[in-house]
Image 1 (tube, helix red, strand yellow):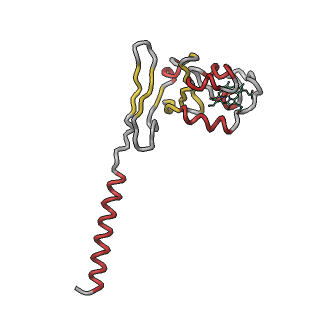
Image 2: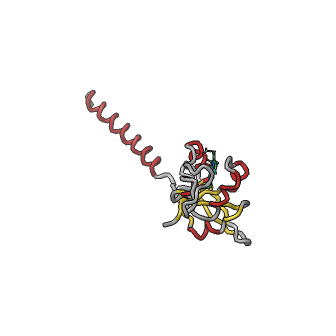
Image 3: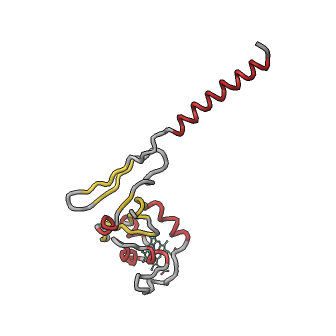
Length: 146
Ligand code: HEM
């Protein structure tokens, strides 16, 4: 076997090995092992054990589900089509109890314009800061269905 043939053979072996590892990496299970459980008193909670960095990516929640979480101790809202559980943030909200207006409903205009659906201004009536927007992600449960 001459030198060129040996080089070609080694290249083919390296390509085959890297192809195998690429295939293995892509065929990882991407199912976000998550569940929404409803307790006997009608409260729901989301549990997720995703281990692949796509946590909650596939969770879809309905408007009716969001509407069940409309109180200060159980507050979900929708902002731009995503569902958030704000319960743990309510006592820390710099704007006080105004945040409760969003519990159980679509809070997009309340959050983005500080304005009710009737056009009534809340507080300054200006959009929340980018720092407020940045905090939202940690409360995300999933996306609104439809
Ligand atoms: C959706 C319903 C909400 C309403 C009606 C509301 C209302 C308000 C009001 C009236 C203030 C006082 C300052 C001002 O009037 O300009 C305020 C401040 C603030 N809120 Fe909210 N809020 C809501 C949701 C949220 C959420 C979901 C977050 C964060 C996850 C948040 C974070 C903040 C922060 C950081 C401030 C300080 C000022 C700023 O950064 O814009 N709020 N909010």
